[in-house]
Image 1 (cartoon, helix red, strand yellow):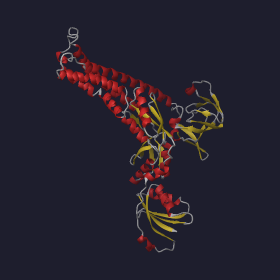
Image 2 (image 1 turned 90 degrees about the vertical axis):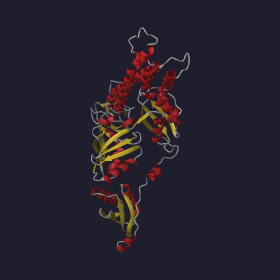
Image 3 (image 1 turned 120 degrees about the horizontal axis):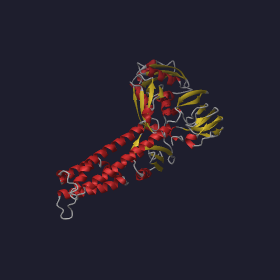
Image 4 (image 1 turned 135 degrees about the vertical axis):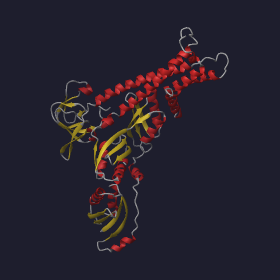
Length: 496
């Protein structure tokens, strides 16, 4: 049987080849002729083996849209029948695919978030509390030093995006995982759309942007649900080539940049608070110690000047406490921001009232210096805390640098060296003497002694035989062996 099918979205010879390969790959298709000018494909197939729906689906899976068949007939059919055919585009409905892939209610999955902006145990408790309040969340735990939140939830009731919005809603931030992929084979804007479409369909991908000129794809994703290897497989599945960007420095420095930005902001706030806080304090204390502070200029004792200087400190360095309090109260949570905002706000309001209103005897005292110095000391503490966390993160980053950069896996019975990010659970990894183990796993063949001192502190190499568990980033000492990858990426013992 022969049929002519409209194919929409083809703009170049690469598209032509992709469609032809997709149709030829359907069992029962005897021949196919794709016309780039007419935007259609003439297919000769065995109706007892396959049908038009299967052929159309193959085209859709390749990333193109199909219309109705212009003609469907036996080889002896008259070609005039093509004039009566109605052409209509079939749009790929993402919602339908999501519904079919949606898990059953009651099933749970685990995801992790990198949370920024937490400064104390109360902050981590607030994040835990707001996550546990969300419908469908079974459990949530927050690690303050690592700034990570682990959540077990029912994907039928809530999505990671909704949990991110809940965290952001109470004044904290969520740092996204990002990766840059080198993409080859693109020749036109339709190729860009095809790659973006297939990436955005992956579960766990937040957004995907493809640059045709640079031949790169920028992807924001949840590393607990999807890996760069999954993205590469999806891109290669529609006829393009993809590889992980060789230089991972940008990804590794993402947290460092966020930490440096926080340190810079707190340092700037501290400078402003100190510069204005010293004259405010001296001006406020002159009335109590006139002889001791006789060198202080008279204008600094003016109440309106003190009001103006204090307002600057409240609006800029002190703003973070009031915005944090507002966001927290809006969702029914409280933290240290509330205490600071209440104390400094009360001192400021009373002082403003005493400055511009005649409240009578006993209410003429000003507390501008109290509000300013309290803000200054707390910002100084946050600045020191941010610097300390930065040093801790740097130490952890150096520890992560001990991880192997590449792995040797078995593909079709042959050894293939790939970046460690492309290793997936179940891959058979080959390790030779003196090499670092790329990921965690279980020995399947061979035996050796493995130096695990960098993880366990044990200086004596441990013997490893089939069935034994091995830890990524440890060093293989003597023999060569193979193991099955059990934990990769953020799930390895080193990453934890």
